[in-house]
Length: 173
Image (cartoon, rainbow, N blue to C red; front, side, top):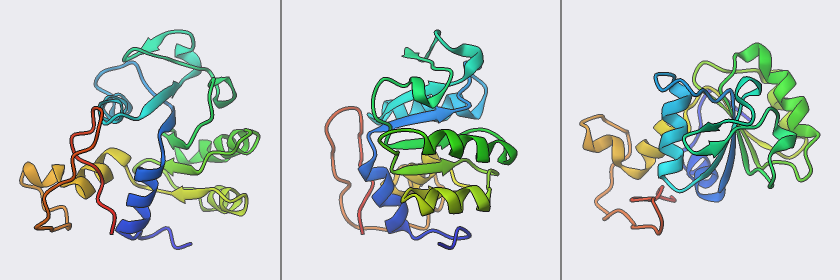
């Protein structure tokens, strides 16, 4: 797959299909980007499990933090990687040992490792690199447009209301 550009339908399909997210590299520091993204995803109704060995056993935003992916007590749909590109092969190794396998490995802005992505895709896992689910969700749901940012998604359709904390859902094409 070409990881230089993603079709909006591919990203929307992922965001509409996942419910549980393990965030590798989640931070308890409220000025770190991973903290903002964790808070946002929780607010949209996703079940997010922070993964951080230094915070294991403590809560971040009311969610128990785990040392490793295998410690998460339920199946994971998506692994969101907030670690440097050099750490990605190790994260993929850990993901490939999970049963069942997650549907998606999502690498945050600035994080890319083509070799690790190829290994994950060979195992049937979708991969997104150098993107942020918070930004993509906001862009595809129309939320970013409220702040005057050109999201590149224009629609005259009224946003779909969804149950739970999600005020607007991601539009499917």
